Amino acid sequence: MSIQRDGLDASTLAVHVGNEPDAATGAVAPPLHLSTTFRHGPAGERVAGYEYQREGNPTNDRLRAALVALEGGEDALTFASGMAAMTTLLESLPGGARVLFPDDCYSGLRMLFEEFLPERGIVATVVDMADLDAVRAACATPLALLWIETPSNPLMKIADIAALAQIGHAAGAIVVVDNTFATPLLQRPLALGADIVMHSTTKYFGGHSDVLGGALVFARKDALAAKVAHRLHVTGAVLAPFSAWLTLRGCRSLGARMAMHCANARKVADFLTSHPAVERVNYPGLASHPGHAVAVRQMRDFGGMLSVELRGGREAALAMAGKLRLFTNATSLGGCESLIEHRASVEGANPRSPQNLLRISVGLEDAGDLIADLAQALG
Ligand SMILES: *Cc1c(COP(=O)(O)O)cnc(C)c1O
Image (cartoon, rainbow, N blue to C red; front, side):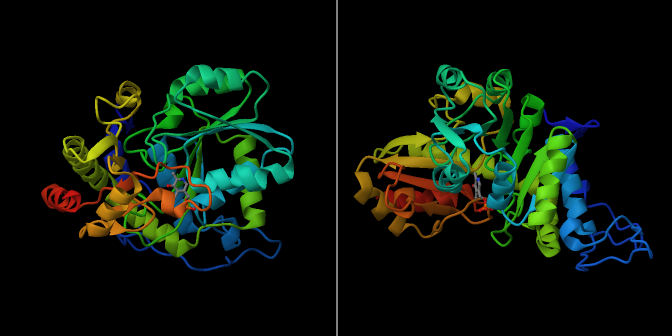
């Protein structure tokens, strides 16, 4: 799919929007405003639109503008982390609401709906979002919210955003997409009918494994956007200005980085697919992936994330992860460096990921070097 606004490609928008030269000084790199408070008039009149950092700050507003342009929304909010963004949104739902979540998803979201949402009487139903009939069946009763994560973590399942948005809306639900893995450079859920996009900007937006952050982008600047903004500004899980500034810096190279993440991941996926020690590669760019056709329709490219399942079970997976030299064993994703993780080992008492699965965040190293390292580790 093509991703444009005002005739400009998303990679151009990522360089420019929010990163315009400073009007007061001409500084080409955006200024970093650390002030917690802003001068106001004797009766509290705002002088330049700002009052107190928790309620808004010029550096954050630049990042919000970038997010709005990239996702094609009308409003955006930035948060201290991706989890803060999710939590603030889900806490805005009325007690007793019914919500639908994906069976394969970020572990923090699962903890929210298994441990915290039930405390408020919120009824969470889990469904395979790649199975539209299953989703339709689960939508039979009124629904407050339908949560999509595509590609999903760590099985890289693909959910049909346009179809799910229709099903969700017919049941009266708000449709939310966690777009962290794809980024708006590869997939724009609002154009496909979603109401809200959620990001962990900690990942590809930041891009250097050195800044935590989250965001919500709203298709419409409506009562819901205002309600979530009010909750954020009162409860206070806001993004620090320095974090916003680092994330804006990440935006400027997002297009170039995503292009290389995608190119490298495709080569790594092709290599792993051809290796006899490998049972299965989960990467939506592969024609053999069950969601490939939908991915081709709704994504511009297939991203830098994949997972691999080895023939030798848990032992083979741990042995491979232990032998790699260029892939660091670490959680998280979206940085310049390649990371690998045995998800089942870090998922607590009841791991959901297959024991033979390793999740890989393919970085920006030379693809040949990465493949040589994988080859020696697979022996
Ligand atoms: C990391 C991540 C989150 C959580 O974001 P934090 O910034 O770590 O709080 C949510 N969704 C996905 C898909 C993620 O990868």
